Length: 392
View (cartoon, rainbow, N blue to C red):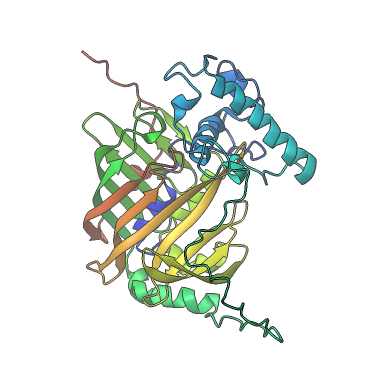
């Protein structure tokens, strides 16, 4: 998804540095099989069989759905210890949720922790009565019942094609978009770091993009550098320790879509279907909501400004063992580049990355954009794992 300026697409979908995927999905050819949680971690009792690379995001989903932090159940950095009653309660609740989904919904994660907790450690089990202020006095007669209920008018929304065409025109038009074949962006970002992304650090960001589908993003802080990219065939990431990994699905497909340099022109073909579901407000502006499902992925929602036609938000989810984990990207401050194509100069993500705690967020601020510059294709090649330099 994202702006055809491609910056929004890459920032939207190339955050996949520590990939999480459903157990049923297969990794790309040549990727070692994912270990289970009990094979990689200690003292796993109820989440047995969960892919190890899905355990952390499952924990983050639980903490967000209950409105608690990790130490509500765990001892910090001694996660396997069983010394808190809340941890055993959580195990019983996880077993209950899984059993209910298996019994009544064929194993689909219809019921989640959020179904009852709604970001509270103690779920409400008694209906909340309305506030009495403003209720009619007893002496006031009730309004008469309607004689006949009139059907509500069907909203007259534009078609999907009309919304997408307006988006392309708002970006500068197809001809201006196709005249650009490469782009280098420098930006600044508060990068979620540390356990669960709860320790943000300031990072200088470089993004290189080249048609038709090459991209790499490098984030440098005072202490470490991380990067991720798509080399035309495979999406990869390199973490702060220098370890390079190939992303599994669905992240591989998301990165491939994100690397499409002319993605805004191809939105209609990137989904099995797109439909207009209504109008919602995004940061004070009305937006048409388009919902669609890319092949092999979950439903995503795109929010286009009713007035300007620009993309304001992209909403998606990632699978966990206990339901789907939400991720949202907001686009703001669209400006024209030297080519006349508009790109968003401010991008905000909640959570800070697709797998950080739900209470985190991150903001990108574009500082400079250069277009149609020569970029060596070697820059996009997957790097080799490098050891971290020894500390003095």
